[in-house]
Length: 307
Image (cartoon, rainbow, N blue to C red):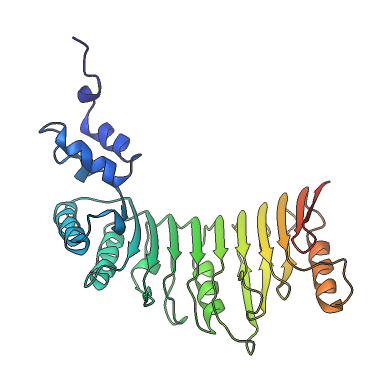
């Protein structure tokens, strides 16, 4: 009879293996034997999608699952928590409390993707003062104002998508960036959603440690004008996608190695002199870059440049 080498592995190694699986697959291992029954509860990561819970009792099953998990997990430390949340009646506030509790217990990686009709206010003080968070990704949550303290001394990865719906959105994002003293990887995917032509949004991205920066402006044509000033002397990799009215001003990008630019503005047309000058000034600011890709969507062509 063949030896069962997997069962001979220590629990600490098995839980690391289960960490590579999605939580729903990790839970399925509980039927293998008595030893495996509660082993998934020791996995230092949890990845959930509320729609995966059985309909029509999805909300009740999800609540029971989370209550059981937290009852067990309150005695240990969870390193990674990822949730794609579609409205479960009566649980959203408890979810916010859960996230706060996990952060207080030393969470390192937090990914929250919200799909709700009402925006979720994600301004919880302890999250932005965590001494353990290494990566933070927020999608479709609400950060309403900049009146909160940010101190994230270990955060290296920050991704924000569709998080601000007020005119103070840039101040909120600036505060988050400035509070991350070792930030290396920043993604801003359509971070602001303000449907008015009366406001000019200006975002300042200033970081002495940033190495990679991805920026996607609003995908719709008729949105508020959006301007960005970038001051990142250690930046090496950059990806940017802009519309016809967006502008970028760069400073201290002498370390830039590679950039990928996608723009709906056509610099070969002469109708908009202001935007043409803005675009050329941007290219001048990154003139030391080694590799550059420019995709002019209005022309449907891509230009690849290697210096």
